[in-house]
Amino acid sequence: MKKTTKTLLAGFALSVVAGTTLAQMKVEDAITFRQSGYKFMAWNMGKIKANVEGQYNKDQVAAAANVVAAIANSGMGALYIPGSDKGKGWHETNVKPELFTDKEGVGKVARAFNDAANEMARVAATGDAAAVKAQFGKLGETCKACHDKYRKEEH
View (spheres, rainbow, N blue to C red):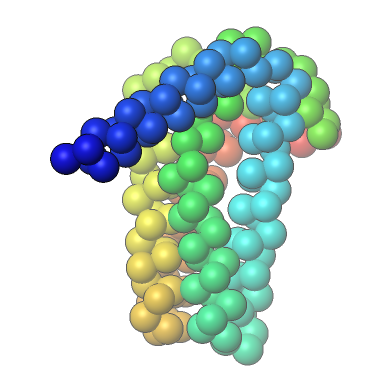
């Protein structure tokens, strides 16, 4: 019982610290962190694409799919703090202001992406190249849905 209580208290303490850290985060840092996450995810999506279009390596695909799922489940939504609709991280943010006002729409595309990313990791673990290719297409559609609604064209 003591171990469970200590674990719960430690988890609560970490949550409070993490929440405080996010609350004090600079806008530029929030933009930089989310740009980094998306760039790393894009690199891994590229690895999956290269495998489904070329020589298929199930281990590479599974590793890349796990990274995409991890990023999808990392809570990156917390990096869209007030004021981060404008500003610079590694480059000027491409987020549209609508992302900050359309909570229902954002929630819908975020859930669809998370579900597709988790399914991508599950399918990739099977090693079935045809199933991976089909799921990769579905995952890409969820990325496009968010980009179409909430991302400005890159300059």
